Image (cartoon, rainbow, N blue to C red; front, side, top):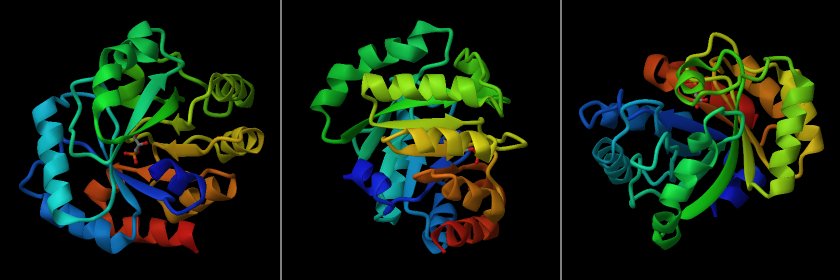
Length: 238
Ligand code: 1GP
C-alpha cells in the first residue's frame, strides 16, 4: 500500500515526471538517474497538455524500466493510465473553480472505483507563487508564510477525511513553502503531509522532513540536475 508506505516513512521522496517533457526518447536515461538517486516512487503528471495517450505511454515506458511504484498526479480526468499503481485523487481545495475542487473527481469516480489501483484522496493546497498549477487551477493562493490560512485548509481536509495533504508551491517555484508553515501544519495533523514545489537543494529538502513532512516531491531537478537529485534523496534519508 502506497499510502501506508508514505505514512510510515518507507516512501520519503517522490520524483515527478511531466509527460510533456519526458517523451519515450529520453526516458531510459531519466529512469536510470532516478533509480540511482534512491528516490522511492515516481509521479506522472503536469499542469498542461497531459492527454491520456501521453500519460499512458509514459507510465508504460516507466513500468518497463523500473520496479518503483508509479502514481498518477492528474490535472484532469484525461490524465489517466490503468497501468499506474496508484493515483493521487486530488481536490484543489483553495481553487475558485468548482471543477478543481470536486468536478473532476465526480467525473472520474466510477472509472477509478473499477480500476485496479490504489486511490489516495489528497487535499491539494497551492501556495504562492503557485506557478502554472496556481493559474490553471484558479487557486486563491495561500501566502508562503501564512500559517493561519494553511491550518484552516489542512484542518478542514483532515475533518472531511482526506487520506493525505499536499502542500504545493508550484513546479519550478523560485522558493519552496516556508518550512515554518510546514511545521505548523504537520504538528497539528494526523494524516501524512507531502510537500513540493521549488525544492532543489538538500538543505531545503531536509528542513521539510525535519518540519514533519512525510514525503517530499521534486520534479524540475530530475530534468535539470540529476546529480543533485541523489544528494537530496541522501539528505532526507540520512
Ligand atoms: C510539482 O511539487 C512538484 O507538483 C514539483 O515541483 O518541479 O519545483 O520540483 P518542482
